[in-house]
Length: 146
Image: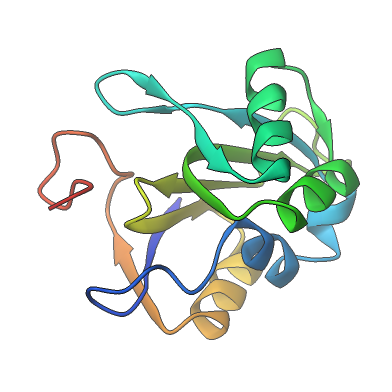
C-alpha cells in the first residue's frame, strides 16, 4: 500500500477538497461504491460544512454503502470536509478497498491505495504530495494542528 499526504500552501486554507480527489479519480470514482466514516483521532470524528456536508454526515452516520454518483453530488455541494474518511470499492472487486481518502483536520488529505494509476493521478494532479510509510494517526509527528 502507498500512503500519500497532500498539503496546501503553508498558512493558507487547502485549495482543494473531496470533490477534487473524486474528480481526479473519475471515472472509477463514479462507478465505485463508497463507505463514509469518521476519522479516529483519539475519538471518532466526522465534520463537513455546507449543504453537502450535512449529507456526507448523514452518510457517515448511516454506515451504509454509498453510490459513487451520490458521493460526487454531495461533495460538489460541500464547502469543506474537515474530518472524514472515504473508502472506495470497485465493482470488479467489491470486497477489496481500492482507495481510501482521508481529510485530516483541514490540514491535509491522505490517500492510501495499492493502485499505481491512483498514485500517479494524485502525484500529477496536486502540487505538494508526500509519500509516507503509514497512515496518519492522532499521535504521529505530523498530526493535525502541528
